[in-house]
Image (cartoon, rainbow, N blue to C red):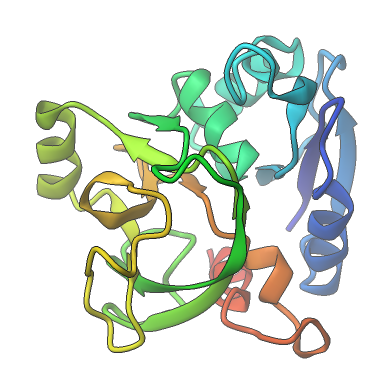
Length: 226
């Protein structure tokens, strides 16, 4: 299985993504944001960081980069797309995922481990997990507050498109376990075709034991299985 990591000015998790993808047999190629062609790959990963310095809105300028036309075409054909942190923001700004990411409720940058509950295993990103499984995954963001209108939220719930929610150690979705104020404790969503996933937590930062945890490895194991 082959993958591509999109690199924007200000990306800072692209090398992390490359390392984990290579270690798990996903054979990554680094693709510059100004490129106009994607290599022949199965997965495109849009990594975390501060693309274009987060000017205007996080991900807004990156969503207009030339390579994003190819990413959209890849997704439209059923190709896999994974956006993490700033990558999630880019995917919402590009219209590949519903909703927006607003400033954290406390208006502070958050960098710590959080607990996540796996809401669905019916995606090619989560099949290696068990539904309801609790994970510990790091977050590092200032604009991770997921927001959508009531109609969109209902569609996401009815269509099983909420993939991860913030929870406590027991798997309960409480206000105290929500680090950023996201509606419905949403930490990650997929599109209707279930081939595009955006998530604020960083699975690539906890996919190997040397990194201090392996709870994120299931995302990449799921992709290999897909």
